[in-house]
Structure formats: structure tokens, C-alpha cells
Length: 404
Image (cartoon, rainbow, N blue to C red):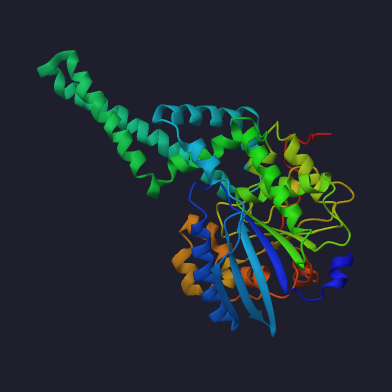
């Protein structure tokens, strides 16, 4: 590519970060970047600073970094869909239980759950966790109803059912208030959002992704050296669709900045394995064959919430003869984190799922802040790396049709 030859060092970069299914406002990501980049700079002995972004446009921040004697200027924008997430989560307790049964039926009846279990047990367990937790809460509420009804019956007769049912409802409400620690409702809404259309993209999200593509297209017409799209968790498959839409619309001029895509802790099979995910499977197939971009997929077996080292194109059954991407690499938490930090984090599953956006004690394999704010493009940084030997490339999905 001409851009690889014309820009041996990056001095200006645009970064677009696509979060996963997260209702939290994007300022959380700025604070995470600010604190963790300072820690990584101290470990790796380079300079980095974060400041407020000037001008209009999506929420983001400005980064200035000096690494290897080169000063790099970065504008990092968060492509926000947290409002869509919040709307999808604004359901009653009975509606959530209805979602539970519909989602479980979708994954079980289509054979998708059984296929997913052939990949990694961790994310499947994570998917079953909210089902088990919510059913346990319902079971306790039923037991409480029966126990109080039995206790009140000698005094109130069948009228005793009223305070018993009220107490059970109060228990369920109390459990929901605890969900900031239990994550049962949060995860249930996450899986239900993808499953309600059996893998098809909801219209409100499809419209948002088109606006994301337009913002990236505008950046590719600017004077930066690299446009880097980062998709984390569910944001990884959204990034695939955003870039595929951009490519189909003819948004890749030859005299443009380098275009790069970094997917982190991806959960693509949770959607691409569903029967009506023809659009996503077509996007995966298209992106995997492109000469005009670099796609690096980073995950770690220690992250139980991702399909670690599973090539999302290959396992979805859409890898063709022209497949070039992604380059599947391991962040290898047991080797990149100190023994003390690994011991402290290894059972904090949700925190580990965000480790890709944080500082590492031994960042030779992977350094998020060098990737986003360093002087090398994604291709320059990883062009000599071989894919992980532990990667999974077997075509596992039962559904492999793509939209023409």
C-alpha cells in the first residue's frame, strides 16, 4: 500500500474507539486511558499526556506522546452507542425473565450454544451465568412466597398470600438493585440484544453504525498518517460491520492515511453463529480479504469473557481462499502481567476483560498506548509477528450463509 511506504513514522493519528455493550457514559473511558497511560509510560519509560479535545464532533480527548524520540499527536474519539444500550436495558423484571427464556430458546433450539461450547468454555459459562443467577433469584422468591404463605395461613387464611407475594416481589427488586455487583441483569440484556433478532442487526443500531462509517470516512480525508479503529468486546463485531460498510461505499482512496483495525477481547461468535447473522458473516468475509487495511485481533486465554485466540472469520465458517486477516495474537496475561498483578486479577473476570485497555508490566508483546499513541502504524508494529500457535481456526458455526 502506498500509505505504508509514504508514512514511515506516524506523527498524527485519529483513533476511533467502539465500546462493547456498556450503558456507562464515555467519560469513563477517558479516565481509564488517562490513568493507565500514565502508568504504562512510567513502566515503559516514555512520555504521554491526555487533554480535553477542542472542537465539535464525537466525545473524545487529545493525546500527546513522545516515544522513541518521535512526538505523536492523537485525537481519540469514542463512537457512542451507550444510549441504545440503556434503552435496551430499560425493561421490567418480568420482561427480563421473558427475555431469559426467549434468549435461551434461541441459542439452544438453533444448536448455537452447543457449537459455541466447542470453542471456549469461558464465554459460554459467562453466557449461562445470568440464566443461572436469575433463575436462582426467582427460585428464592418462590420459596419465600410459599414459606410466608404457610406461616400466615393459620392467621389470615388465603389472604396471607398477599403479603407473601409482596415480600417475594421486594426480594426480586432488591436483587436487581444489587446488579451492579452481580451483573446478572446486565449480561442477560447483553445476550438478549443480539438474540432477539437471531443475529440480525437491529435497525436503530444499523443506523448508528452508518454514522460511525461516515465519521471514519471523513477522517480518512484528513492529513493524519493513520486512522485506527479499535473495537473492544461487542465493539469488535460492530467495528467489522462499520469498516465493511465503509469499504462497500468506496471510502478507501489510494492517497489516504493508513487504515488499521484492532479488535480486542472479541465475542464475535456469540452473534455470527446465530442463523440470521448473514450481514455480519458477509462483513467478516469481506474484511478478511482486504489489501487496503491491517486487522490485528488480540485476546488472551486468561480472559474468560472472550473467545480467546478464536479466529472470528474462520470459526464462523466464512474464510475463503483470499483470506488475509485477522492476525490473531495473544496478550498472554500470565506472561505480560507480573505474578503479583496476575494473582490479584485472575478471578476478577470483568476487570480482566478490560485489561487490553490498561497498562502491562511486560509490554513487549502488546502495549495499547504505544499502538494508539506511538510512532508506528499497526502494520509496522506487527508485520513481522507470526499468529499465535494456539489459535483456533476450525469452522464451527452451523450457519455459514452470507448476504449477497
